[in-house]
Amino acid sequence: MGSGDAEAAARRREVVEGVAVLGFTRDVTTLVDAYKGRLGLVGRARADLAHIAFAVAYEIDYLLTWNCSHIANGVTIRRLASANAELGRATPTIVTPEELLELPEGARL
Figure (tube, rainbow, N blue to C red):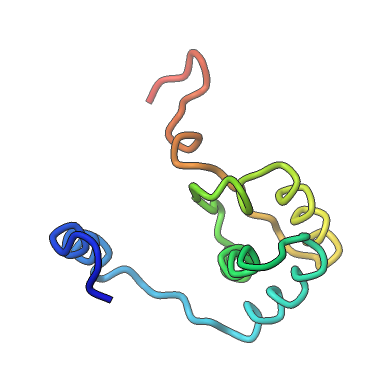
């Protein structure tokens, strides 16, 4: 604790002040357990299962991530969609920030 740019950390805390914090519910825990064998994430990558489980449990429309190694990649997304179909759950759209901000060709804001 205490490492990094203290000023940048203070700005980040200011940005998220007042944002609701989602609880680590039994549903989230159940999904993490269900995904362990289905998504193929091993070792330290298993920590990413919680991010995915929160998005599914709370029925979040988009899971925004820069983690293209374990979350925003085709294999994980395909396995997640398959697992959620078995579990009767919706799968959030998983995108990187760049993908979310890109407009389709010819589209305007």
